Length: 303
Ligand SMILES: [Zn+2]
Image (tube, rainbow, N blue to C red; front, top):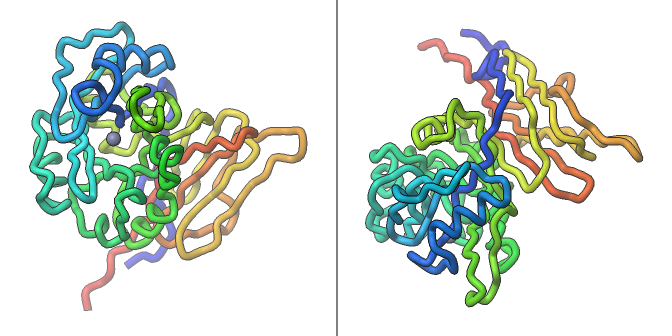
């Protein structure tokens, strides 16, 4: 039995080219205001290279969508309570089934599963902890924040992670691009940046499942390097780099007045129990969120 502190992803280095991607938007196939092609083109105009089309209770066909420089991936927003998104799936699933069953069915199609707007759905930690095929949760939903004041789920994420559930965090727009809705929800407010081998469906879905991405409202991680007992990050210029865990104090590194930060390392002596994750805050208050790095749980000797 070893109780030496170490992370689970030693010698993991996320760096190089990234794909700007969004996995929550609606088209005229449900309550969105634009066609699939117009929606993808709207995203492309904002620098996106990959969009998951998540119309309610269906998988909108995307095969004929060939907008230059931006791919569309078949996906669905299930519509159940609590709601779930499947990315890279073929068919929608019955929304009245329990969350764990819906997650299993979407994962069984090879999909990446994301719990949608958890605070809007009134989710408690156990709802996600007891859901083995749930791979990610929305930690920021721009539409829910702007229209309903319930778009963030950072504390819930930490509670779920703190109970040992390995779950990635995703930022999304929930863009409807629809002037007929009470609130106009636009594209490009919250997204993910993926370190993937190729801009096509399977490499993107694989990278999502591996957690090889971060979420953001603007600032970016240029690299995240994990060694056995250290983490180093480089990033766009920011005013704060925040090291977060659950049940222990974290650390906030502030830039000195008139300066910015572009790199940081795991603070000396910081030994989280279950996970650590990193947040960036830029000078406009926009945030980026790394995925968690998990602390290795030592094998317990049989007794
Ligand atoms: Zn939605």
